[in-house]
Length: 217
Image (cartoon, helix red, strand yellow):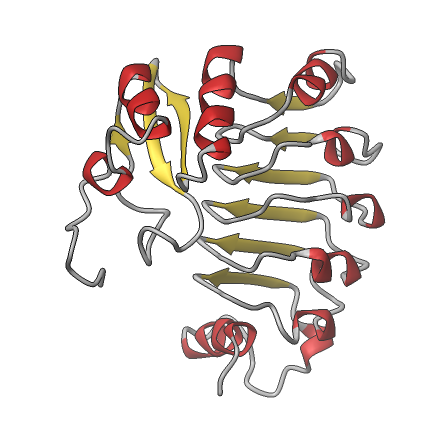
């Protein structure tokens, strides 16, 4: 069976962005979407940029075996733990709209120049650390009201997170529990609706406009 890593590399070859005979350790940039496993990723030791979009991997620690990784993007995925991050020389990390509670491993990285942790159920310690961090780097986290709403959503295992954009509150899916394309279909919402989801009064699929009862395509 073809792995998600193999599919991502094949996509690069198909569009002419990578030579077909490139060895795995010669791949520099990779985008992997909708993966349920990252098997084989640790063979891509030359990776400098990695994007994981809409994945449901569970354990992402294999990423820590990429010694040259400078830019990491993990979005709309089921990421809950990033304790492995200090093993990497990251300069940019976009870890948003996931299920991460403890962002301190990333916040403590001396090499980080830009860090986006919005759309996560970040705990108070992480938000405090972000506010007290190095003023010479860029760092984004949710306001307390949004973060606390995300914590309630995570405690109820809803698979939904919220974030602010252009002054409005938006909701989306994380991982692959609700839809095969969690990076799509973001909807404007309210805190009242988010509380209804957390309390079980509103199904996440209804808020996100998913066709309940039909297999997502």
